[in-house]
Amino acid sequence: MPDLSSIIKAYDVRGVVPDEWDEDVSRAIGAAFAEFVIGDSGATAVVTAHDMRESSVPLSRAFAEGVISRGVDVIEAGLGSTDLLYFAAGSLDIPGAMFTASHNPAQYNGIKMCRAGAAPIGQDSGLVTIREWAERDSYEREPDRLGSVTSQDLLAGYAAHLHSLVDLSGVRPLTVVVDAGNGMGGHTVPVVLSGLPLEIVPLYFELDGSFPNHEANPLDPANLVDLQAAVRRHGADIGLAFDGDADRVFVVDENGDPVSPSAVTALVAVRELAKGRGTTVIHNLITSKAVPEIVREHGGDPVRTRVGHSFIKAEMARTDAIFGGEHSAHYYFRDFWRADTGMLAAMHVLAALGEQSRPLSELTAAYSRYAASGEINSTVADAAAKMAEVRSAFLEEDGVTVDELDGLTVQLPDGAWFNLRASNTEPLLRLNVEAPDEARMTDVRNRVLEMVRA
Image (cartoon, rainbow, N blue to C red; front, side, top):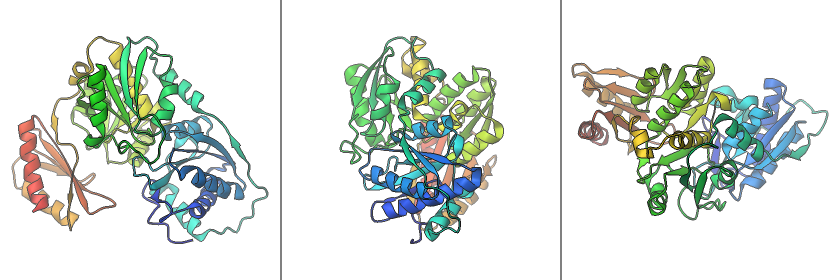
């Protein structure tokens, strides 16, 4: 087996099919995953699910062949979103593997793996071992049996669990435009949101891994244009856009204007805090400073983390946090095995909107206190040198503080701040700026970019 380090990343498997990986590689990873979960927890079964990409079924079946070759059973959940796979691993209490490349283009595919209870498996928690064993593709232990493969439809159970967490039956009638981007939201939304006082206007619900309409990445403003137009055309109350594997959701208001993921994080945090079952809320350091402010105002304890789901999930486990949110529109819930689920976040927003009479723009205004730049990427030859240059320039000024929890975060005395951090996989620096108003944000953004791009 060749070196797999190019496709086994920090959190998952991701690469071009068949150029970078194929069914043989998937079979070897399946065997390694089975051996790992046997040693890790004594697992005797795992659950798999897959998205709508053309390569997902053959890759997931080859993976299952690898798993059963090591004496471990496979439960195939079939078509599903990534959060459906987390539901499966949580409710069945067995390890899981989801076949998806999320928002990546059609030629890509990947695997997201987790322990029983949807606990993450990342580079520091088993993925390196799985890669090494898959590359070796030989084992001293001889299994005493061949595992079996069975199928189980978990979509109804997934929907029922979500309904147990957010009750939408009593909301006022709402018109909701949903852009599934030809991804797995087209499979899950009709089941989860049916039978409710919601008129669903579907966009691109046809499952098609070639993504014929637009990329299934709602963080790119170009991929929201159709949703925004449809919300305005239908006079809808809200628009929802899911990414390819439907674990992320992006929200637009009745005017077609995007609602920032930070505002969604704050809104959902307030709702979770109101349950009185905990006070800790996790947010990464790119979210608006409005998030920790609002969490404190509602009796909560905000905890700041690095960017990335493994850090969020680790902090949620350590602190028993009730909720966590990221600037990238990933939302994590203690009641959902600390895993991320775009659908549950969407249901919270729908409930908050439908339980009162104001339009979404007015409802979310209270959670949007500052002007933000969004994430801006710059290609650089030496990311560390550029960050050091920016750090030195700003530290010469009075009242400036810095921290390096994740890249470089600079706090300015007037309340503006920015974070500059390097990409793990590309020669890029990522800049996020926030300030009390648009003019100040623009000033800080332009000054930092001038240094970075000089």
